Amino acid sequence: MTELEYKKMIYEKASKVKTKKELNALIDEICKYKHDYGTIVYGCAAAMNAAFKVVNSSDMGGITGFHAGCLGWELVHEYMMVRPPCKIVQYEHMLFPQYESKFEKVIDPETHKFLINKAKESLEKDNEHASKAVLAHWEYVANGGIPFGYVVKE
Image (tube, rainbow, N blue to C red; front, side, top):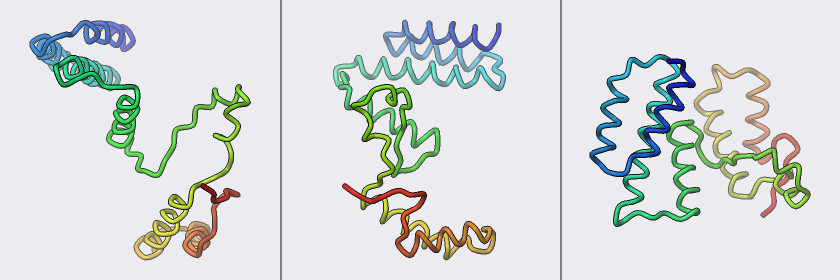
């Protein structure tokens, strides 16, 4: 079975899971499969999707779209190792004029303060291994400079 065939098959099975018993059976199947470098990712994702469905359909479930967005950010932080402050840029929105403000080179004051503090921290602990260009950039930011032509505004 190819990686994409496995993905399609295991995602389809995950989409049909409704109970904890079915979830456990799916997890057992995923754990017993002889995964390769690619299929393990799809197995994990299928298990997460099925577990989400079971929990969300419980008496305490029923998340909103807002909750789903929070869940997505939790996964970004946990599995992509991206720490706040951060944003996701959906470049497709460049096709619609109403989204122009999303592409301005703007950071808020809180993010600017974060960058200043992070630059100061980096200068204190990482200055032996950083290049001269990086050190100069950290100094600039640590002294209140705003990187890359951005502006600070609410």
